[in-house]
Length: 158
Image (spheres, rainbow, N blue to C red):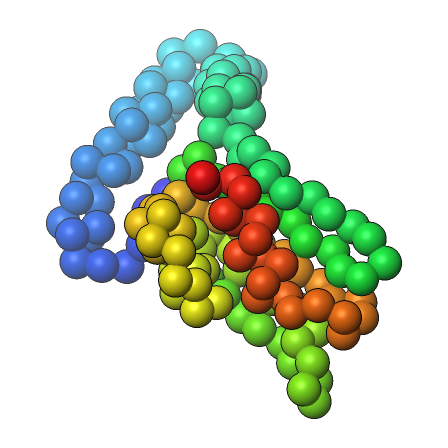
């Protein structure tokens, strides 16, 4: 069941699947043994403690860091850097109405992919493989959203 927790679908993932879920399998055997030998309460308590330790470590070490958070009258721009991009990448999506870009959204997208899609010629950005979440909401039509995003990325990665 825990194999479906991961969003990867390539062949190597299925070949390595037994190794990927090995810690969960060993934990399940241990919890089952505890439950049978000591009772239901101790099995539940051990499971809760196990989850508490794992989630505490995740919160402490695998958080995302905010690079940019701008909210003004013209636009909203949020860019966060992900420490580990384990989820399936989502392409940068642009929403338009008439000749205006309303929003640009991307989750778990590489910085170099963002630079390519936004037609950047900056070689530093085109080499960055950091994973980002980008959320741009255009409130007016006064500035070019692509320029705004690229300028903020250049500030952070230079």
